[in-house]
Amino acid sequence: MLTKRIIPCLDVTGGRVVKGIKYRNLQDAGDPVELAAFYNEQGADEIVFYDITASSDGRETMRDVVERTADQVFIPLTVGGGLRTVDDMRRMLEAGADKVSINTAAVLDPDLITHGAERFGSQCIVLSMDAKRIPDEHPLRWEIFTHTGAGGGKATGRDALEWAVQAVELGAGEIVVNSIDADGTQTGYDVELLRTISEAVTVPVVASGGAGTMEDLYQAVIRGKADAVLAASIFHYGTYSIREVKDYLASRGIPVRL
Image (cartoon, rainbow, N blue to C red; front, top):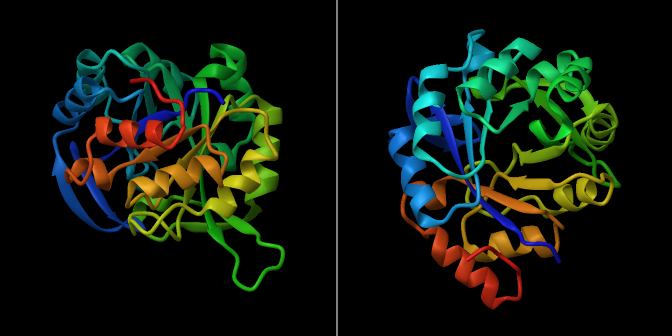
């Protein structure tokens, strides 16, 4: 089993890190630059920075915050939110990002994945998907939503599994799978969703949405077959440290970078 990555997620709006439940009732969680530096010191494997209202507000990602964050971290930094063109990707990579994450723009224009991969390499292009269970569907199915930073998002009618497979074919080098149903609830990841996507694609899958305990992260890796686990609330509010999570996973036989 390859080493599993532990990734704190910084959801930012108005220059501050925030956290809510299912993208609603956002609460302030601190300064993004300070938090990024703190997690870097703690031993995080990567940092993910999402400007969560850039797409819904129709504006660009805050480059200055990205630059200041990149100056403070010496681990891979992924940036997403409001990236609509290859030039937007270039600006974020020049600002210090190692990878760019696209969600809404990729759904609206799937060719953006290919153009980004051709320009910067697939390893730089992360597809972030927000998926919600379709009620009473057997077997289980999930629908892709866009503009989720506004709270609730917009249904697309697109099947999450089909979208993941298509995105990899187009050139995505990694997929962040976020469960809208579980986001911010701290009741555990949607492991069925994770497993469904993980078994269908050949690129790394990152679990997102729902981490509340260290057992949740373990289940995302074992049952969900995720290559990395992304979490926000449990780190921002001091429930667990990065080292506590890594020690726990290591004690359960999960290879991590200590």
